[in-house]
Image 1 (tube, helix red, strand yellow):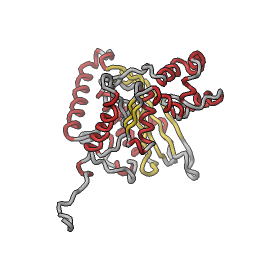
Image 2: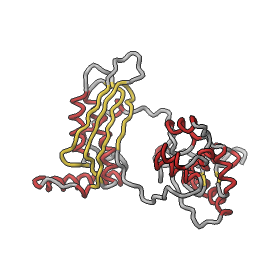
Image 3: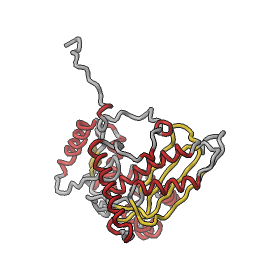
Image 4: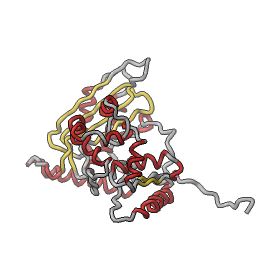
Length: 331
């Protein structure tokens, strides 16, 4: 799994003539069970598969499935792919390549490797080799633990009072610590930031943040909420209409690396048991059913308004489509 809406599958061992039909089977199965349209790109390497997927989605006659199986197909795709559309090439490198006359993916693969290595380091070399059909980016079956976990959401309305901001911040801490515990990790650092709306021409502007080192790396919701409240009390200034608060956890390490305080080991064990119970109950009865009282009961006053969000047919029972049992008049 590469991201929330994207994943790679190793198809080594399948015959070339089976690839297209298998791609359509994947696409149809995903749509049947989720209602989500999917693009499938199949190629010898990850970078080429990304290009194939892009073509599958952009060129309707492929019916959302595109396969790069031959050398002729590979070259054809590279010749019509702009350098800026290659996965992993950012604006800086794209401009540098364009400045020396490299405008397509094919031209990039014809660029001397020594130049690529010098200008774009080993990252560029891997892209160069992948585009030429050489596998450099291996499949990762078990995702690596996140090295940083954070969240920041705009308020549904401007907030002036510290108490409401603290409630929102506590809610976000609850979210990120749940992710942290799920991967059996703890964080060494906590950062909280607060800002007004930078696009408002009428409101006074203010933005601030602060980062602290935790005395003992932690994934405890209550511990981190307490630290976040201290930061907010330090950076909050009255008289401003705030638009957003955010939290970031960094310095993430496996929880078994932590050397606890000898005098607090018993309390730490109790805290871990409490957090485990929190997670088990929320897993069983639904996210957010058990929460810290510090998140308050006034969520409607700061929560982002999601009026334009699509219905969550696959995750929320109360948002499922309603079907009528009445027969059509023509039947």
